[in-house]
Length: 376
Ligand SMILES: [Zn+2]
Image 1 (spheres, protein in one colour):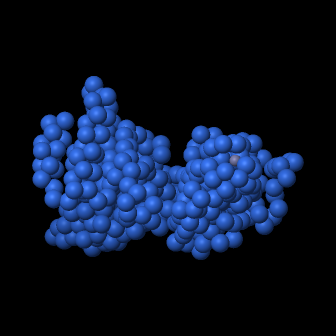
Image 2 (cartoon, rainbow, N blue to C red):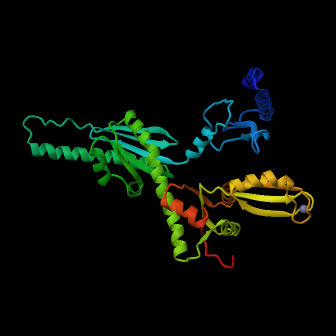
Image 3 (cartoon, rainbow, N blue to C red):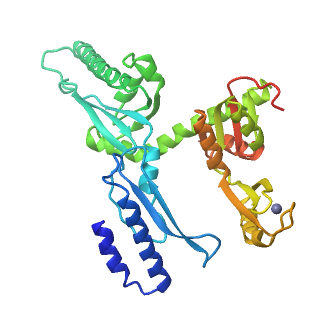
């Protein structure tokens, strides 16, 4: 509140009359909303407030959004800008998955977790194996044999810790193995990891180092690795849907209206929505006679309708008293799905399967729990 009071003072000096008024209004609105909180909510608070153009310049309306994030928000940020800074909230959305990292070479190993771009070191180990030079008088063969046994012991020890640490993370999404030399491959291909963890290996990467620098190298490569993991997951989901369609199993529904029916009937197991789905669900309602009409529109059709709404006559009573309510279809269907406890998957347009979902099925598809009967 103290900072907002200061900002209010500063904002009084803004030269443009409109901007000044908008900023002052926004600060006032924000302070009003903050007063409703006796103390900060446990996960913190995000307030967005500003004059949003409804339909081109001159149609701005003050809008305020107060959000309690689902996980703690870790930054304090005040911005007065021409856009809302939602990045810290997007970070939280990205933070769902935990990955394991193992860095290993002949001398050292490090185990860490990766969640939301943050790495946490869990364990560091050294092999304790002396250098490559054999002691005088020792035969080369005997030296090699001893060395192999020692390396094997070391891998076993590392494997024990990896298995113990990562099997405790029930929702571990994947395992990334890295390191400078061939050790990582020897370890990966040997019998050191338990079966479940072996299946979760999503990438084996070269790093120049073990330790903090090695972790930094993995973090640098992580976005690409994670994108790859996500894409293969998306491909698998769309392919499963295509299988149900192709084999006529009755376990698929697609298109907005079919998917909505299946959702209502509680039949949906997984709902697939293309992130490129840009349809708007529009409800036109007459203030006088109550006539309503439902339509799906593209954004530019929607804009035209909003412009004309005031002059268009009601189909039933002929009064020009129509009001328009709109909702992004993507958001609406995702919300219905989430309320029904359905797995909602937003599918990118970056894969061939993602394009197929968008172009072949209108961007909306569902894999069903049970075959439909009499849904029509
Ligand atoms: Zn009417």
